[in-house]
Amino acid sequence: MGDNSIQTVRKESYNWKKFFAKPEVSVLMGLIAMCVIMSILKPQTFPTSMNIFNVLRHISLTAILAVGMGLVIITRGIDLSVGSVIALASCLGAYVGRNFDAPPIVVLLVILSSGTAFGMMNGIIITKLRLPPFIVTLGGMSIATGIALLITGGSPISHPATWISVFGGGFIGRVPVTVLVMVAIVAAGYIFSKYTQTGRNIYAVGNSEKAAMFTGINVDRTIITTYAITGFLAGVCALILIGQLNSGDPSFGSGHELNVIAAAVIGGISMGGGRGNILGVVVGAGVMGVMRNAFVLLAVPGFLQTIAIGVIIVLAVAIDSIRKMRRPSI
Image (cartoon, rainbow, N blue to C red):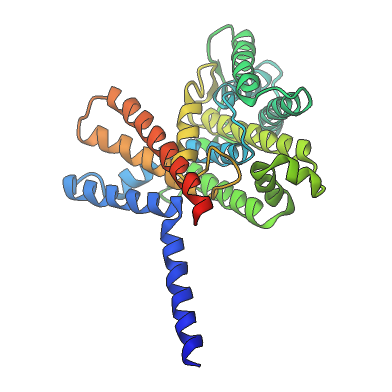
């Protein structure tokens, strides 16, 4: 009995060490530390409910997109077209709504389906033509931007406020609807990745495509699914932006791919594929959101934000590489 109890205690101690060693947990601890420090430095502005909701609202788009990007990266892919797909979906929705007097439900379906279709197209080209995801999605970024410019003539298309505007500009009490959408999508992404067969297949493909194929997994379909999900979530972001600004704009989402990749990597998604927790993308997005908010409150020059994000991405990838090198020896 004594030996069994000692083994149980040791096992519990080991599990706690393993828990705190997870990338997303260590980043969460860093995020909490950042919030505590800012609350001490700016007690009158940072910890207020207004500022907290403002930060959450600003990280919502990044966190929503990072769910899809995380799944793509887990399969050892990348999607550089997400920002441009946001622009394209918003312009298509606004164009249909204004020129064809389409009802809001049709505008919503156009936005979501166009994003999903573009993401699926990326996945099909990558899997069927065996082309590198970087090259395909880089070309997709240019194509989506070009189509958006063609539709709009380079100028925003106004869209009247309708019930779909609630996704971007609505509130439930003091909570922005955008934040609730983010929470719902992150929760759905976590459940999908952890508790569904397709979600488990995504991790298997990321670990080894050949091994996944030998176990009967349809590798191509799994990869296409991740890009389709990312495109769908880009459509959700387009819907939110239309609700916030009442227009479709070819500049929507410009440069957003960097923020999304950063959120995924900072949140513990391994660039080597096969590892990562979808909940971590919220932590990664939170780190960037708090950092940007801190720079504003501390009056730090804006260009340092871009430098800081670049440094954090490199550090996150370097830490992941070190973990990967040490893993076989454990």
